[in-house]
Image (cartoon, rainbow, N blue to C red; front, side, top):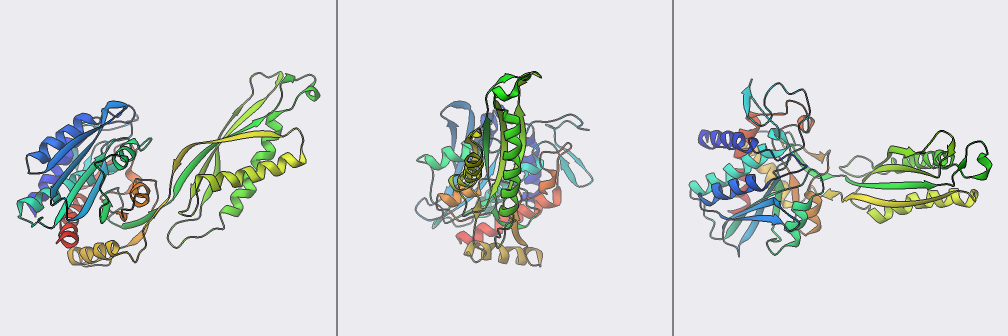
Length: 385
């Protein structure tokens, strides 16, 4: 057990040395390193580059029988860029007070390292894969546009596995759902004229004020919706811009809207609600006009707490740690929804606390790495044995 713990720590230190900050990403060298490492341990590996950018790549590795029951261990190898204020080199792992510091230690190369070494330990310990297959799918571009997971699922390398686990930083809790997000650009349209004769134009800022109030009322109604696991959905105007000069009536104001969604909501249904509010304003004001377009969309993810994968995780957790596993939601978007929508039951379980993600002096507790390595080892045995 101590061997695989140390191996996970050592691998994480090596992964941190790859600067996979997104943008630009440049995940391919990291993917190639993992492919070579796993190939040396008996895995079949492939570096899957994005068609539009060969410097961006996924790593797919598998061991076992392709015709057998399949389990996917998934993570992402890109990280967010580094901001000022670090007290150590963000791309050189440093251990202090039982914590390993570096960019991506928490989000989420720690989880990638734990999954990798758990899989290698299974091989080295002689686990019988004759009736099953374990796959490691570590993707690029999760932090921005999810192009890595989209490319994998749309490719001929995708398999509809029986189960998948994503090792995002969940504080060793079993997260079975996450809210989705859609972002819209709502443009309130007016007519420019000289500010000395404002009646000759249509002031987009004034009409944007009406739109903001309508969005606020819609947000209050949306917040009343409930879900067994997830928090209520939200609608939040986050950026507003408009106007060109202090003596010109503005002809356009752009409002960016962040809409957090539940599993039964879609990009179309959420936009229809906003359009309904804008159409109501238009009916009462002949000078009110607008247009709306979505520019970001990630579906919500959900796995029933009654699913056998959740039960297997709970049993594994109890046998390893002697206590009940916490089942809850995950507070950030991740790739769960892509797997679920592709027919693969998926949950999130991984080392580190989400509050450490994207921070200065990011770290992961080493004990989390060790415990997760053991968890992924035992879970694979339970699901594939």
